[in-house]
Image (tube, rainbow, N blue to C red):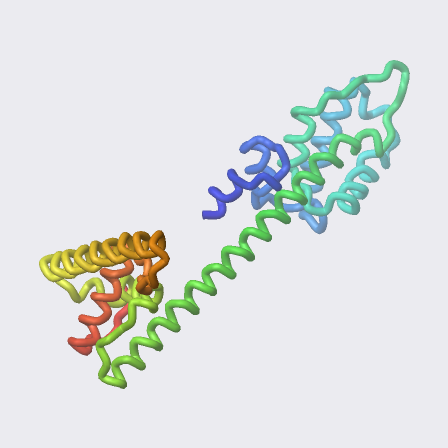
Amino acid sequence: MIEGRVNANENLPNISKQAAEIMLSDSEPVKGCSLDTKSEIISQLIKITSILYGLRPENLHEDFFPACFKAICERFPLLTAKDIGRIFSSAQIEKKQGTSLTRDELLQPIAGYYNSKLRLIGEIQKMKREEEELLKRVQEHENEAFRMYLEFLKKDSVEWPFEMAGFALTIAKNHFRHYFKQEEKEILTAEAIKILQENERKVRINQERTLKGEPIEKVLILTKSSIYAVLMVREALRRKLPAVIG
């Protein structure tokens, strides 16, 4: 579900699917990383200096690469070794003749990528919170529908109102559908179609009355599925069926 929303989210940075997968990988972040990860990252920086910047790493100060790693940890704590590989594999580096390399020059290509990573993580966290809230509301809705059904059972009432069709849809789907045989479901469907057609007839009459300035009859606009669900819940109440999950 999240993946589909990520693909459709216009607030996310304009990045490739491959880049997004790397940004969201469970690789160890640089801040507080193991010695192996630290060694891997420093080794990457050494290769990058040689291949992309055309410099001999041994000619740089001995503290240069440890200082770069320290700065990465401080400025880009969520960065991973995979991120660094991705950043410099596509970076466009303009080599300046006769110059050395400073720490900040080496780290400059990271900043834009890291901002995109933070935006991506932030948007996904937001979507997860929204999804959790939605699931919570769905669960609350189902619990309320279940509570209402028990109340109708206590009152020995089978007249579940069509105004409560939304709750009927939830409880019929999650609690009662396994109780009914196929032929019973077909009977309920046929009855739902009759009610739907009658409602449609009343709507047409109301439209004619409106044009004539005559009073109209109140008609609930319901789908066939909603009507079917109400009929199923009414039948469940008539049989005094216990609500079951599944």
